[in-house]
Image 1 (cartoon, helix red, strand yellow):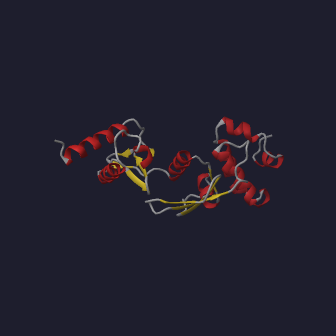
Image 2 (tube, helix red, strand yellow):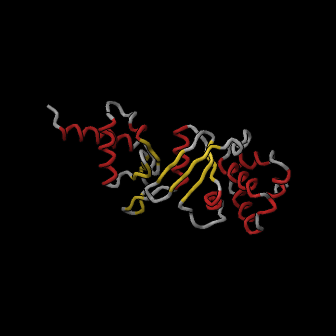
Image 3 (cartoon, helix red, strand yellow):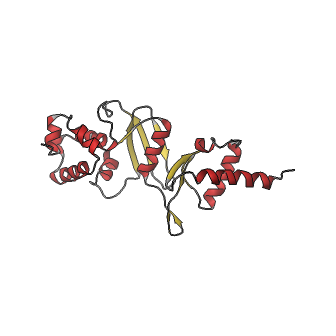
Length: 205
């Protein structure tokens, strides 16, 4: 007859085998673990708590975990943008960071804000991270142009339009151009379809 310890060991083994199929740094949700055959929600929650205590997983938000990379023996907390992109992908929406967080991602600010605001193309959502950062995600149709599919280009374009080209300091402009130059080739090709004043601002001529 199976004992409780046998059941726990069996569940732990299956969860560990599943984790090994993922790359280090992968963001996972409870729903991902529910795909493991014959595991109940109760079993999974119990095992996830156990794995977090052992440092095998990091709980980054309610129902969201990271299979972390390591610095020596210390698990590394994932970048906030990695968490946001993973949640957006799993829940089927797109995101566009704005305000101070956009400035941080594009190199204008050096410090990540504790209160982050992003747009998405669905609904209002709040994400409270275990590192103390709070994220508010707000719906906005205008931030998601049909021909701007690139995350980086979308964020850059929204920031320029929100602030106004003539209101952006020269020092910030240079940082925005450097950020644009770091984007992939598809983003740069898409940028050629932008309004002429944006093209001039980004020095694309």
